[in-house]
Image (tube, rainbow, N blue to C red; front, side, top):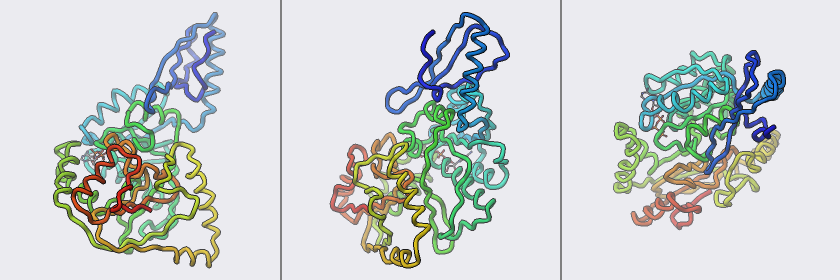
Length: 392
Ligand SMILES: Nc1ncnc2c1ncn2[C@@H]1O[C@H](COP(=O)(O)OP(=O)(O)OP(=O)(O)O)[C@@H](O)[C@H]1O
């Protein structure tokens, strides 16, 4: 008998053991280059139908033990994200894999912006599903995060407008099928923006915790952020690019050049609470990956935080630092923000789930120096080596 492909965790198919046959086809996940996964098939031929039935029974039993695999998914497709290929990508590349893995999916093609967010907030019957999948880019993922987090807080009576509210974690996982312009969140979590790879990660039940940062203005809740919170240059690029959505992904280049030429700067004061020692450093070159020891360490330090005495809390307040100045960009990166254009990202060593954000301050400087800083995004590990850039 041929050896079975790798471990049972990589097998895809469940079997209908009612159909007697001597041939046993099996689909499994194969890792290829650059973080990409593919689905391969292999057929085993048995000496008798009875033996084949035995194999099928054992395989079914083994697969049913993998309880982290989803069986029912709620899928939202943004038909207008990126190059407007969301529907085609889902139907041609993802749906056949879900069918093969016996995953049932309820699909909603969004009709307008915030359709998915509002549906999740109020209407969706979440008890029916093991996870939510978004087919689109970072904006679409953000909609799903807002919908799910808000719904969870409402269901648990938590007031998310309070900056100090202790949010209840969502019970459903979110899968991303990349079909946007930058797909930075997919790239930063999976290592590639390939729809088939993402579908296979969803099928085998992989999961990766992520920090969610809430943004408030006084008592008013503004939004959640999971990747880059940008004030100044990046905020201006995004605002301008939204007006040029009809241009597709090229809008980021055009808005980037326009904002760069305007060379605006902003004067202000930034206050922040430095992380405790041992929680990683934005320049320590430790890349966050699945099972990252720094993100795991965070859980124990957070547990400790809940037990902080009043004095310890007070001294925490004393630890706040303040920087005043003129800035071209004030960025808070909760993840590396890697994407195909910037393979290492704006903050290559940012951690996905360590409970901290990397604060990157770009002081007012000449156009040439700022251009040199931007160039680093495309090829350098150390994004902050220049004197006008401070990182903490
Ligand atoms: N049916 C729709 N019509 C118009 N806009 C929509 C629709 N569905 C979702 N949207 C909005 O489209 C915006 C952009 O979508 P998405 O993130 O999928 O693509 P993108 O902006 O091209 O990619 P990226 O965010 O990775 O750059 C989202 O903010 C979302 O709110």
